[in-house]
Image (cartoon, rainbow, N blue to C red):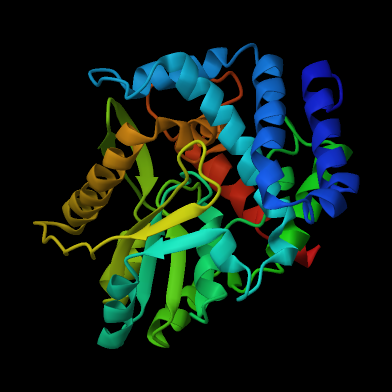
Length: 349
């Protein structure tokens, strides 16, 4: 799929960033990252038509809510933050127990330690908010036994084989996966068997997972600010079956800050329901209500993910937001589930 000039230019930029750029950016002094990210983010915003679609997403999300800052600043900072976070991926190989403190600080470790003292493991429940992957090196390099339930980047090339994939983008995804595998974490493919997730919690270890991903077998709806979202009940199923402690966690980096702030909050309290479906919904809503407060303060941390979910709505089992414009090639839930199953087997081929 190389016919779109804008996409081709973006993919060529990604290739340059991940190959010759990675050797340079992994060693450049940290103080230079912000001006580089600002320039790269501004270029990305220009290529995206000054963030037109992002403005639509922001307006729908904040329907009935007041923006914390002017819209133009939020859009600008969303592109700059996305570029900064991408540069952080290129520097994964330079992170260690000695250097992680220069990149991240952690608040709320007492909640994690208390959860592990209870002996049933801890679920670090996140959204694709800010540099959410920084949770892995932040905890892993401190010696915590960390596992992450997620989709390996190359899976996206399989999911979007008919609409997005091309050889350039596939090379970028492969390179990103090679860098992610160097993190101090055990990766668990969300589209494969979940036995390793249960086993790590049974061993009183840490499982990180996102509430807003595309994997899962059963779904419920929640209200996220001004929109209705379809979310997997996978986190609640793991919580119910293991009795693990669920700790809502976010990664913050306000503009101008060099370090990320990993914030681990107090554990969620289980809420009973008349039926299992009701129980799934009320507990997911309790988490999303808390997550929404972070989005209200830092919408720029979430906008790039919202754009991605809008782009892939045609291949999602259930599109993330229910108010997306119609997609001419929308797969049925069964077709999308089968495509995810096949994509999850890419390592076997």
